[in-house]
Length: 85
Image (cartoon, rainbow, N blue to C red; front, side, top):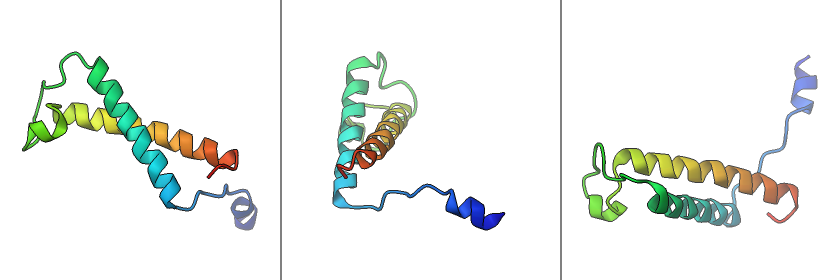
């Protein structure tokens, strides 16, 4: 049964600078969306140097970068399936 399961496994994307660029762009886009839409970005625990993170609290930073990673995962998988990565 195990060889059958291994044969059904999906190929994953190998890391390359192109995949890193896509992930970085998606994270930057998510941070821009957070900057434009979060009504109270400085509520909660603050990082040691808040001016470095645009005045975002830790929760806002984690939320924005989490969204960026979800968008990046989808973009990388979609671009790979289209043969562009």
